[in-house]
Image (cartoon, rainbow, N blue to C red):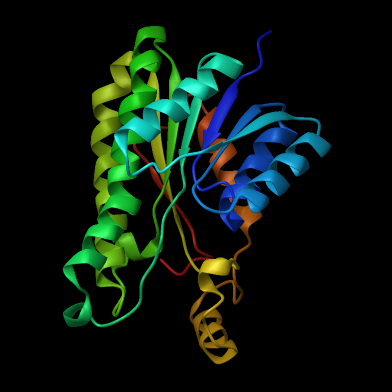
Length: 242
């Protein structure tokens, strides 16, 4: 039986690398897409191989359509079809909404949302032809409930939720499932700017009274990718906060 291939964007980061590792444990071929941090991507690949998986690292600016096309071309040249797409790449920004510049707004939109549009569009072409495939988008709890001082970020993550629900309806007849994960506070580099006091306060408001781990999101991604009767769902991995 041919092994399935998963393509993970932002796979050099905490959640992305954990997702790559979890799929490797399940025997998937893993395409590790990254933008800047080549060493971290190579470390992710090394771990994938240690777990018995096979993979490649591909540098790509997924805000750019030509780079997205080249990324999928590389994946297909190595492994054949991309069976599962995980749209994980993203950036955050804190600050008052009135202080967000036009360039900052555009950067958030391009990185968090346009990249999802481009990757989904490219992945779907062969998926529709084959009548199978799965897409898992990484949104955020703030895309569901909004966050003060993270308005632009919340807007991009809310848009991903809308895209997920609509795309699931459109592609369901083609046998393609589209779901999203909305993580709460996860212990990653993206949240390393938070003080211990901030983290403690956040944990106090969370019913499970702790931060989540990248593995919590990764395990959910594999579940959504493999379950054949779940689509159009937004799964909150947030300790019960929302």
